[in-house]
Image 1 (tube, rainbow, N blue to C red):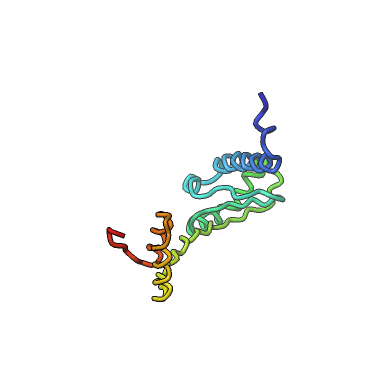
Image 2 (image 1 turned 60 degrees about the horizontal axis):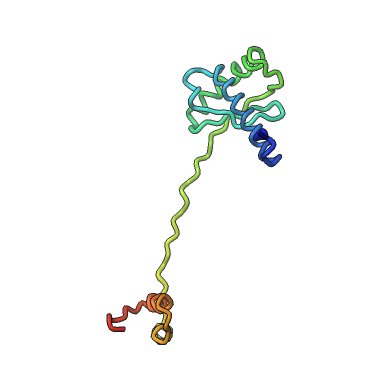
Length: 144
């Protein structure tokens, strides 16, 4: 049986490995965060010695910024993350809900409506006939 890593595209494999590393780093950093901040932030990235911590709220970000110097020193000395040079705190931007597009009812001219109804009456294929009548806004009588 093949290992799952051999089945994945190399780019997807690289992304999965990066996600695993970030999750491990997140767990390690949670050990050194103050109790009140553990559930309020997570690791966003760690590149070139810069650790980015993300919070959902500006209030938590402020509290986290106050603890950054102590956290940085603990992570370097106790956690063994020697390449850590700085910690940035960012607030995750909430995505606003997508605006709902209003669909305005289109009107067609009386001449176009009459022509569509004429073509519908000449049509023998029932689904097309019904669609044309609906397009024209015409409700045929039960005998038609």
